[in-house]
Image (cartoon, rainbow over the protein chains, first blue to last red):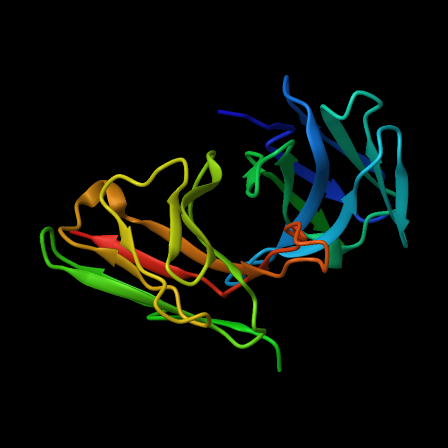
Length: 111
Length: 117
């Protein structure tokens, strides 16, 4: 079974701070996704990274896929209270038609 | 509006009382899947379906059944619920690209919180 470990598990910061969330595995994935989940709702896809070393930006969020396609990071610049939520990475395994989700990082951004 | 609809959203039941959580999507997606979400464990896949009448086990299928008789519906059945099935359940769907490859973008329902006493 492929596993994805996220760190940190919890992060509580002040508005305006920067942060990075990590998603690591010993397995290679054909692509990796990041989802955000708000209380009472299902996860919503933020981005998919496909190529090793790929960097994608979504406003203040920067996503990077590791060169070996085993890990990824999410960097948020100048966090805002609206960024509060549970961030989940998900890997699509080579040859698999299903996703493996990470353990999640719960982010709280206080005004 | 494109959506995945789950029912019920909240349910408290007792051990052994059969229950079904329904899931319906209006996006004509071929792929559907059920996950359970538990603190510290992330989302774990229970069952998935690549198309009508095609289902397969995920990582934690024990105690669950599914069926896919129609493209839009993918119900999750707990024949004899136990307390360790207390969890938050999500149904999700996805489309295939023209190449036939799974697109990978999952659309989730709002979740069904189940408590088994």
